[in-house]
Image (spheres, rainbow, N blue to C red):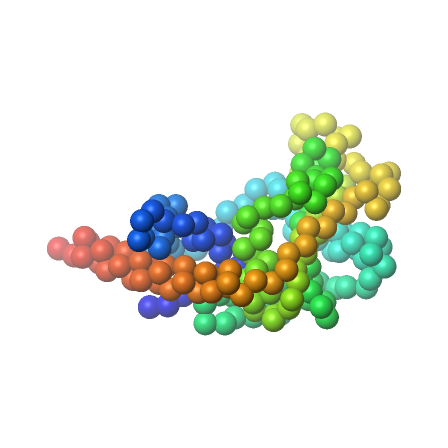
Length: 209
């Protein structure tokens, strides 16, 4: 059985295993979780206040990006698949993919590009470049005010940021397409398929009486 791996979760299987093993221990743990979800018929969706903010302010963050870069992009709603992965990029421009990340507050906002480099996000963007056949993908960290109901007991001054110059509230981290890394995605996904089916078989064998 083959499954499509979500671009947003791709990094879970991309770490290297030891020796000849294609999958790391962490990757096997993640694939085991997926196999369990399939056998038992559920889908565990992780949520947090950080993710809730990202969902609630996504349009506002896109508007901020457009204001800073003098563009008029809108949220993409198309999901694309290939033989290995599936994904729904935030913005699909003519020459690039743009992934919007709404920072939680001032202290978590990366003010320099190198602070925003993240291997998990990088694999997500490489998946998008692969799916949409684009030569470049950018992570755009956007800092907008946090909805009051999400702030809780935290210092509100770290969350209310509308007074700050908007150019200071967008940090872009660019990535250039790399077909070698895309080949690695294919190898890892195919190794994950093998392990996924092994786990499903083991679950069946260990629960047959």
